[in-house]
Every structure is written in C-alpha cells, then in structure tokens.
Length: 388
Image (cartoon, rainbow, N blue to C red; front, top):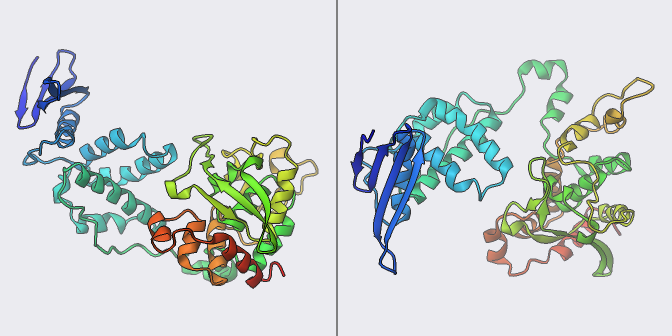
C-alpha cells in the first residue's frame, strides 16, 4: 500500500506493514553522493513532523503551510533532547507536558497565544504553574531552533501565576504552623540547632554539604573523600569540596547539571570542620561520604521531622524518627537556598554567590574572571560569627 504524500521537503508513504516511512534528500555530499535520510514511524503525523525537522537540520527551509502541532513538536523534542537531558529532568518534562497536550496538543504551534497559556495556568497550583510554563517554553524554544516556529510566544510575556498560600482556615487553626510550613529557608539560629541535633544521622554529610557549601542534594550525595580537602586559607582552616558529579535515584552517578556546576567550593565553618571529621572516618577514598541511598534520602529526611515513635522496638527504617521534630520542616533541597541566603546576609556579592552555587556561568564570569569564593566564605563565616 503506497498512499504517497509529497511535499517540498521529501515524502511520506505507508508501508505494507502499516507503518509510515519518511524520506528526504537534500543536495550532495563532498564525494558526490546524495544527502538523504529515511525513518519509519507508527503514525503519519509523526513521520511528517520528523520530515519537517529533518529538512531544517539538513539546511532546507521547510514549508510550514500545513502546520505542525504541539504534540508533534513534543515528540521531536523527546527524540532529539533525551540524550542531552538527565533522565529525571525528562521525567518531569513528560509529566508537565501531559497538562499542555490535553488542552492544546493538537493546536498548530504557530497559533499558540499567551491567552491559551494563561487559561491553563489559571487551573494549576502555584508550583505546578511555574514548572509547566518553564517546560512549555523550553519545548517552544526548541521549535524555534528547528525552524518550526518563528518566535517563542512565551518570551517577553508576563503571566499571572496562582498564589501559593494556605487556606484562611489554616491561619485560624494554627497560624504559627501555617506560616512555618511556607518557610523555604532556615535562619542561622535554626541551622545551628540542627547542627547539634543531626549529628550522627545518615543524612548528616549531605545536609552539611548543602547548608555549608550550597550544593544541590544530588551533588552532596556524590561526594567522596577524594573530593574533599582540609587546608589553610588566610590564616583560617577550611574544608573545600571538588564538585563534579551527582547521584540521583534514577542515575546512580552522572555529570553535574551544567558545565558551570563543576566547581571548587569552600564550606562555611563550623560545617566544614564537622564534614572533615566524617570524611576522615571513611576508609575507602572513592566511596560516598553519605552512605544512604539517593533513592531513600527524601523519605529519610521527612522521617526526621515526624513525631517520635512510642514503640519500644521501632523498625530500622524509622529509628531516627522525630530527631528534628522541634525544627520547622523544609525540604533538604532548600538547604541550598538557606546557604545562599546566609551568604547574601553576610554581604557576599551576587556574582560570587552565583559562582559558589554553580549558577549561570554567564553571570559569574562576566564580571569576575576568577571569583574569590574562598575569601568570601571565610569573611562570611566571621560576619555570621561562626568563627572568630
């Protein structure tokens, strides 16, 4: 069965098996052979979407008069970007894109307007709206790069994101709890209380690296003794971390999130001194300092804040339950934000603070060829009265 569909960039025809074949030929190679590509798909729409993108990649501007849908662009995005992005990131993208595909998936991407996006965002929670908008923008920017779209309709637009606030009844029942639940960082008093309470817990090394050096949780979980050194800078003993890998539940060990995330970070004191103690207790220089599995860290961290168990023989999985229950609960990932806040309060410049956290390389290196993060950290420790 042939059912050939011709266009200016190639052809799509149905095979006897029922699958669809897309073929394209553009120009010739240096050796005189034709530049061509062929691929088969389960559906005609997938084949046509691939053909349009392949044409742009081979240097032939495609005819988009027939249009290309958001669903087709998304399928191409997964095919082209899956290798580049972390598995966890792609999993989040797939989850968020389901929201968009259910509403505007069959819409021509060139017809998507800010009003369409706003209507979807209005029905989401604060956190989901932020993530959903970010993911859709990434997919539409991909369409622009592939010349499937002239401009990203989300760029330069301001959207109303639903507010993130508890119900009024929460303030009536327990206003202190309602406010504390929304705290995304700890102040220094809370951090120092935790320093005593968390001592000896499985997640202590990861917590120290996050709050003392601003590492992402996955970066902290990947640290090994070989990645840590104790040295003297400006007359003060400091602990430095070589950050170059990450450990997640999906990928046991992988590269950092971005190139700018590969960095050397000096820890605030006294967190650095305590981290060095833990490092010295590890025999294998290339085994993780934090022994708990990355797949268990979220549940373990939340368990620390639950009410203490009254059972005489608590299961091993909950033996540390309630150790931090006197502290306001925040996610372990927010300890990175806490570190950034403490450094800002100590007067550390935004560009140096960004370099410490592996943020935008453009911001950090635009103003500083080599930001002196060590001196800034020592100064911050003194200003926060953590060391004399």
